[in-house]
Length: 113
Image (cartoon, rainbow, N blue to C red; front, side, top):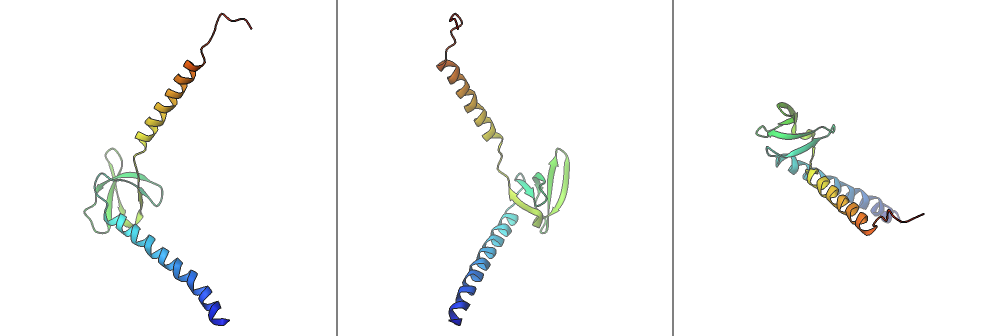
């Protein structure tokens, strides 16, 4: 009975340690693969574009035109996908739906209520 209890406790600990190790390796790979021009978000929520990634422990991020700040590589949380194209596509789809709805429901101004 006791060995079974040990196994039941050890398996979840082992699996969670593997999961943490994998996540840590992915984060390290992301931080090492950064290149100028990549859009990133820091752990504090600041968005910017990588300006210089030639240093081992730090990275320069342009947060506004002409404003470059230096950060630790470990502060980079994720690469950000440019969502501007997605927003434009959604607007076009909405405009098409409105135009279709207007065509589908013609107004009869001469009809009496």
